[in-house]
Length: 214
Image 1 (cartoon, rainbow, N blue to C red):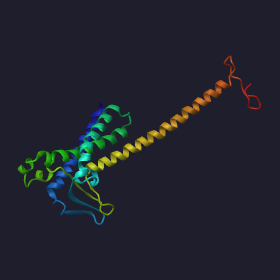
Image 2 (image 1 turned 180 degrees about the vertical axis):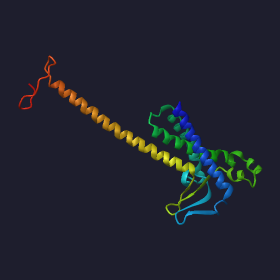
Image 3 (image 1 turned 30 degrees about the vertical axis):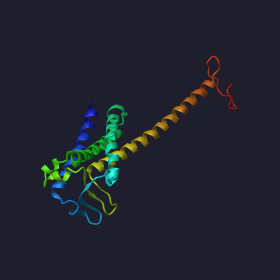
Image 4 (image 1 turned 90 degrees about the horizontal axis):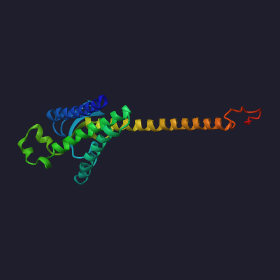
């Protein structure tokens, strides 16, 4: 129960942090035109609206509906696995919680800020914070333009961190399982050798000078 509440807290924390950061950017920056230099030539804040998935992938209208359909399914599957089937590996659970929180927060933008779903509702909030968000787009702001062209947000960051943590945990689990399996095989082989070196009455017969069992 404690682990479950902790994971729920992590998910809600990621969603809250991401939504607050987007709210601050939208309320204080001009869309696409305003830039705040943090590290000159390397990192800046730039407010854009992304109609695609993380890092601007699949932003075209025809491609957009592919992940608009698959994303909720993936988020639901991760949630079920996290709370029902995941093993007792805390790093794996935390990684999945990061992915779930980030994915869910971006999905909030796409669904509840979607003009296609709310239609005329966006007009009620004309020239307000909501009018810019009710268009089915995700707010991005982190621009490491000195390294790459993709602009991302807090949710994307947690998704990447969660994915890396999950992959590393799975790789570590595979390696440790292989080592444990090898130890078990070696132990079984040693046990078999001991049995083969025993007589029919179960008494151990020591090797002779030539290393052969008597």
